[in-house]
Amino acid sequence: MTTKTDQQEVVVSFKGFDKDLACHPDGGERVQYVVGEELELAGDIKACKRGFHACEYPLDVFGYYAPAGSRFALVEQSGQISRHDGDSKVASSKIKLSAEIGLPGIIKAAIEYTTSRAKPENSEHVTSRQGAASSTGDRGAASSTGYQGAASSTGDRGAASSTGDRGAASSTGYQGAASSTGYQGAASSTGYRGAASSTGTQGAASSTGDRGAASSTGYQGAASSTGDRGAASSTGDRGAAMASGYQGKVMGAEGNALFLVERDDDYKIVAVWAGLVGQDGIKANVWYVLRGGKPVEV
Image 1: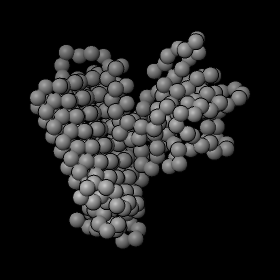
Image 2: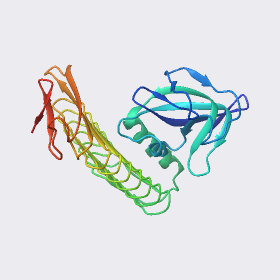
Image 3: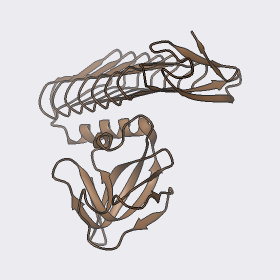
Image 4: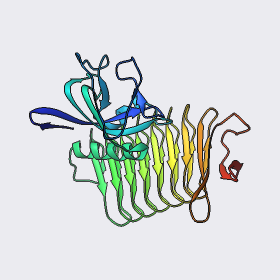
């Protein structure tokens, strides 16, 4: 989205970074970013060639930074502006990192972005291009199968499904479920015992409810589960799975990255662990929890 401030265009967009919140704005020297600080680059700006780059459509960021192992933030771009013809990438001479939002934040932003631009329909099941479906009733369901469609269900035990290219699905209700099978799709479930599944290329799934589950099978996909006793599974190439809740568990395919947090009965973090499936005895397609600071099969 774009706004005007004192006749200067300000673009609110989304940016990916490496694990240290750094990147290379013009293919040259590494630049370290800090939340709240503004950076400026002198000279001509050209998308894909020179400038600070970010994407207006949240999921386009995955084309440049994989969901697994990357960090994501909301940024403001200004000064000289140059847009890319192939996707929503924007180059600018000025950039300010407003807030780090992480993978769940990117998913939430993608749903809001798509829904706000969707063509309204008089049905909870939408098949049109860029359509949106929303269900807020008790045990309601929402389905969107159109290109860049979005589905949102906030009712008790509701379900949301989006199968379109770059679609997004969100379910925040009690025992809700969200599924996205489109290319670069995203699924988010924040309800108690909710589940999120993303099978698209570079897709991402996030589940924050207690005992919820997140599954990502797409290439370079990422699955994150932060609820108590939640589970995260990543089966796609170069994927990653993370469980940071109480007694959470993870599973991955060969070569996937796994991250676990161990908490005591007071929910305090006592240990963390990260590893690769196929190394140091970590088996593919086997569930692990962290006990005594070490991954244990379950």
